[in-house]
Every structure is written in structure tokens, then in C-alpha cells.
Length: 369
Ligand code: OSB
Ligand code: MG
Figure 1 (cartoon, rainbow, N blue to C red):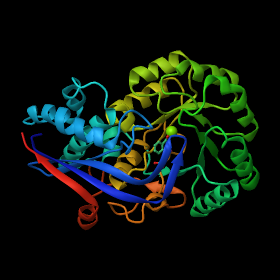
Figure 2 (spheres, protein in one colour; figure 1 turned 90 degrees about the vertical axis):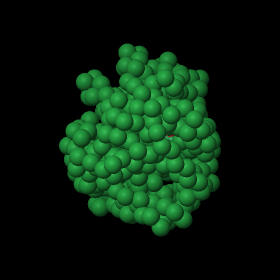
Figure 3 (cartoon, rainbow, N blue to C red; figure 1 turned 45 degrees about the vertical axis):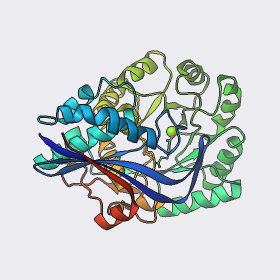
């Protein structure tokens, strides 16, 4: 496939409500979109890096810079004949920046799959046409407020609830949620690395609440603490930030640092590496689920396609567009009996709505080989 041009577009989309985690508050999404243009058409990728380097080292402005200055020149030097399967190698001279690289790989893959008429889910080897929708619930200002928010999501039909936790907001909100909504609720928590190994006895106080998992309690680079927690608890330990590649997944398995994995394609450099991690986990009987980064419909479509792979056996952080935005950049994803339908069109299977996209755009640059 020949790449004729690449557009970099920044968009700003307000969230319907602030999203508070142990690492900060997000009020809007500042998103970098990559659009690859070829003779046959186009392809889209969403860079999920957030405005601050607080979830991981990447952030929107930095990702924009590294894409413009270091990644696109490499891609465009190979523009005459590029396929998605080669993008990681083409960009490999640049260390790190998986979210920036993933946005480019996805845009190339989308263009390639649109040209061949192949849906992304089919290309990846997906086995379902709808995926269970879970919802990630931010830290609230009171337990009563949290319970109201969770009740609203359960009325919407969400099949699983994840509570964001941090020291001072953990046992009480979890206990209250379990007591109010009962034993049947699929409930899990995510600390985004807010605890230390010394907190293991405290985290053990979550054991009575029958959580599906505890996600990333400790720092990204602290696998040994996760190993210690996994050995101490019955509740499964899940890694998010720590898994940045297939190699880091192998290390986590060798160290018995997790029982479950949250796979985000963007965190590991793209869908191809994400599929290798999925396959490795399947071979080790480690269930996985699809995480999210408050994506617009463009990134959401790509996430939903990934979640169709067979070992994605737990509900993902895959919510309807309305959970995030008043107006999404694409036709909204909606809940259908607590599930999201997998787009059936070629590539990611969704298209930005031109007027909405233009109204949200804060900058636009075009690059040619
Ligand atoms: O840790 O899973 C996370 C959002 C932004 C950054 C990190 C995380 C999250 C979420 C929300 O939990 C997932 C979503 O609904 O997109
Ligand atoms: Mg997480």
C-alpha cells in the first residue's frame, strides 16, 4: 500500500462528567487523530495519551511532538510500500511511545483493511459480534454520590462495575457498593498504582467483597510487589500499566505477578502486539479483558474489535458513547442489553462525522512523503 499523505488532527471533546482517578481529574479529552491517505482511501487511528503524563509517561502534546518529529518521517520514508505488519519495525528506532506508535499502526491497518473490505475483528481472528460492556466509575465526593452514579449505570444495563480506588477511598465505597447492589454484581477495583507493597495487609481488607479482581495496585515497574499480593490474596490480581509489551507479559507470567490482564492495544504499541499478548495469556490460562482510555468512537471501535478475541472472557471497560460524551465523533456506540455491537464494516468500521469532527478540531497538519 502506498501512503500519499498523513493528517494529524487534534480535537477537544468535553466529558459529560469529570473522571477522577488516583492520578488526577480529566474534564475533557484532548485527542490526537492520525489519518492516513492512500490511493484507495483512508484510515484512522486515535492516540489515547491523556493531557498529563500521569497514567503513564505519554501525554497528548508529547505524543503529537514525537509523531510529527520522529515517527512520521520514518513512516513516510517507507511510504511507497507500507503494510501495518511492518509499522512496528519501521518505527522501532524510536524507543518507547507506544501510544503514539499505536495510533499510526492503527491508521495504516484501518486503511489497509478498508481497501481489502475486511473488518478489523475478522482480521484479528475475533469470535463474537457483540462484547459485554463494563463501566469504570471515578472516585466520587461521597459514598452516597457514588451509589447514585452506580445505580444509574446499572439501570443503563452495564454488566460489570469497576470502582477507581486510592488510599482513603477503598474499603468503604467497595463495602457500600456490595451491600447496596448485592452478591450478583460483577465488581472490581482499579488503583492505578496508588498503593505500595506495605499496603498489602490493608488491601487484604477487600477480600470479603468477592471482587473479580484488583487492578494495578502498585507502580508500573513494581512486579515483585504484585507477585507478593497475588500470593497473599484469593482475589485475583490484574495488571494494566505494568504490561507494556509481550516481553513484559512474559516476565509477569514468569514471576506469577498477575492472575488476569487488562489489555489496551494503545499501551502496548498497537493491535498486533496486543494480539500476541492475548495469545500468550491464553496459552497460560490467564483470562484477559479490554481496557479503555476514554476513547472517542474511533478508538472505541478498535477496542471493541480487539475484545472479540476468544480469551477476552471478562467484560471490558467498553462503555457506550453517552457514558463519556454528549456528542461522539462517530455514530454513537449504544448499549444493547448491556453489550456493544462490533462494527461490521471494513477496517474499524466507523467514520468520523465531518461536522462534529471539524467543530472539535483545534489543529490540523498534513504531511506528505
Ligand atoms: O486505568 O483503566 C485505567 C481511563 C483513563 C486512563 C486509565 C484508565 C481509565 C479507565 C476508564 O479506567 C476506561 C474507559 O472507560 O475508557
Ligand atoms: Mg487501569
